[in-house]
Image 1 (cartoon, rainbow, N blue to C red):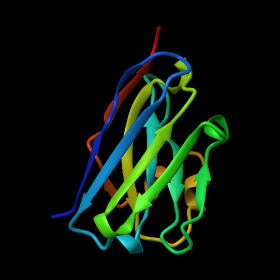
Image 2: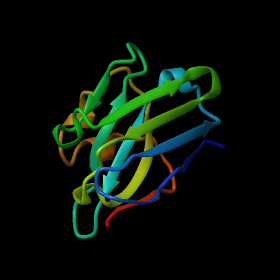
Image 3: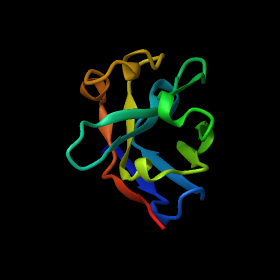
Image 4: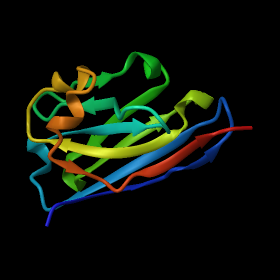
Length: 130
């Protein structure tokens, strides 16, 4: 069976840092784009960051550029999202996601990226509040 398991969510103060982890099992990790979506109450699920399976090139939604960093460890089938200088608007449930593709192009299209995801994690809550 294919699984993505997130960890690392929690409560953090504005300006603080948090590191999310995603452990994959049951899929050829190096053939999948891997990244995170997030969903806040009353809002659509949006792609936050993606690392392409082929080139390893990252994609970030504009609102997190310069603050979040995505990385992957292919040998251990894991991915990470380093969240720095977090803001209250980053509060959401974060979902690890995998897509069987080589580029993160579709992730950049609102409302379309989520439809292309092949595997979802269970989600982890991130709350930014003082």
